[in-house]
Structure formats: C-alpha cells, structure tokens
Image (cartoon, rainbow, N blue to C red; front, side, top):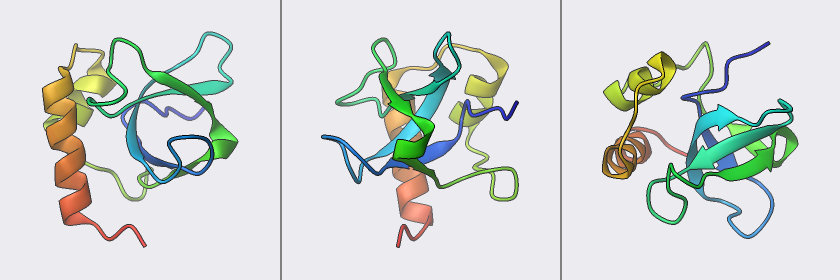
Length: 97
C-alpha cells in the first residue's frame, strides 16, 4: 500500500475545492485521506476526503523535503503553525498550474 502521510494534495471536490492540504493520515478503513492545512482544518480535526477527490502534488518522484513532512513520516506530533509554514513554503516554491 502506498504511504500517503506527508503528501501535499489539492482538493478537487467539495467546499474546499482548490485548497492545498497535507495528508496527516488515513482513516481506519483505509478509504479516505485525513487532510489538514493548519488554519481552517486543524491537525486535531482533519478533513476526511476520498482519494479520487484530491490531486497529489507530491509523490515518490517529487518529494517535499520540509522538516514538518519528515516529522509526519516519523509519526511525531506537528503543530498547526508549523504545518501552515510548510504549506506556505510549498506554495512559494512551486507552480500549481
């Protein structure tokens, strides 16, 4: 199974369409990704979205090596503030087409 934690995604459906989020986990059934952006969707209450409703902006070929993402991979706690800064750095450093 592909490890989605720490991947940066863009929501393609729903109220938050077009928003950039970080995957902070997968639900118990393994069907939905748990997304947070640190502002509207905090890490304590992530948004559950089906994989088909998001576009992966990073993957194995294009990793995002921010320290916050590495902490998520290790299972360490991450603050909302740090997540917001990581997403801002991602937006600043890439063109989202």
